[in-house]
Length: 313
Image (cartoon, rainbow, N blue to C red):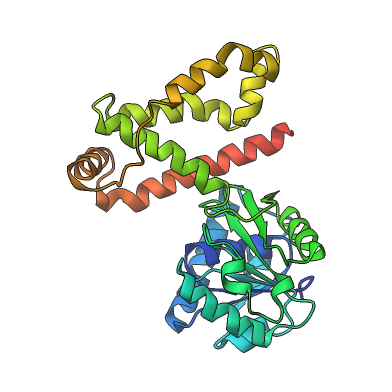
């Protein structure tokens, strides 16, 4: 038996990753999907992934792959899945109405001590919890993709989420090896996607305006900004690139403002530019090679995470 029960609702990529993460810390994990074939398939994929991670010496936690696999099971209905769970991690599709339906069902099944947590990437928790009797137990824990290799998790409470629920969720995320950050007030898109979308929008404009190719734009991030952002955030980067942040502002604030004034409108990501970007990407990674490239990505992210952990903070 594990140290307690965690329920994972929804067996897509994020759901499978959460199940593996919780099992790595010794929790009993029960997964559920309204499509039985999805949960059955998830168990098969999880078993394969955990064995691969173990053979590559990238498995998380102190338990063996087989020990972790034994901690993960599936339920045939939602009630069985969440019964006696300490924490429920919802991972259904990114659809506001679907979230409301699922959380209404969870609300009817929840105990007063159960944390009800969504993996939504943009939808604020008040949107689907306002009318629930257990609304003080509802919050968001939004992981980056792929969660097993990228540890950041945004913890997003609503105005009525209990501080104790926030604290418990932060501690759980730390326990399973993730890096929780707290979004102190609701904002659409949270932090990860607001920052990510700002980057994507400007990258799009650089290609749209004929400034750079897709390949060169990606190189600016992978061989430039991304190199330091793997260890430092943008604010600390500024701090180190001058004699402190005050000096950075004195030197560069006017230039940053002036450049930012020229960034242009938010692109709609459609039409000829969208097709040109797609075609340039397919030249590098054809659609039939996406799974191979994802594996390549995940292996490198896992190695980077392992290196960062070995080097310490």
